[in-house]
Image (tube, helix red, strand yellow):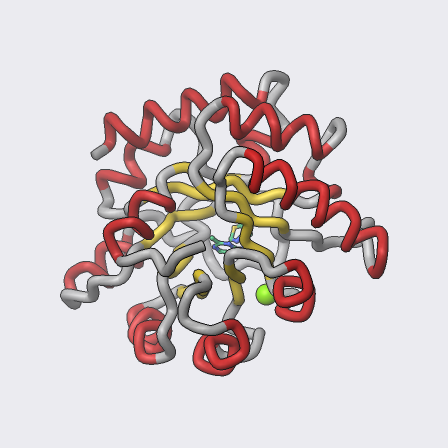
Length: 220
Ligand SMILES: Cc1ncsc1CCOP(=O)(O)O
Ligand SMILES: C=C1C=NC(C)=NC1=N
Ligand SMILES: [Mg+2]
């Protein structure tokens, strides 16, 4: 992927689907294909939790999902697992505060890859910029049961406190986001929304993605 400037990154964050095998009620391959048909703009492979796949099984699933993203020109991001991202030549990685710093990851990935960092306050947002991150994931905005060890639910406060500091890094909201509240997250000032279960548990993932995409568009 050619290096994406800030404006392209903001557009890429529109409807940012995140999924691993544990988040799916049916075949992850089908869920991703339907989500892409519905208009997601970015995909993150996040294989976590008790039943998460490991080793070759994890790599094979990642490759299958990456192939689907390539076919439809959707950038493929890997959560946490830098080695896997390098091995697959993924389009980028997403790292949390407990992972290695974005500056170290940048040295390993190079300038033409996307690096996203989870940020829960202004200081972490500022550090992410210093470290060369391309975007920050801020949340949980609303309560979520998908990730049990989240920071406290913060609603719009962190997004607004970051923007009040005149910090200009692309921001994606995360946590409990659905078609009903996605527009609010954009009105709070986020460039896009990232979701897991709103799409992965939807009876029709294509329709769920479409509804999120229109809520985001209206929110802008
Ligand atoms: C990975 C992550 N980080 C903060 S909340 C969360 C889970 C989001 O899942 P959902 O969209 O199903 O609430
Ligand atoms: C924890 C996370 C926060 N934000 C994003 C975009 N992805 C994540 N895995
Ligand atoms: Mg992590």
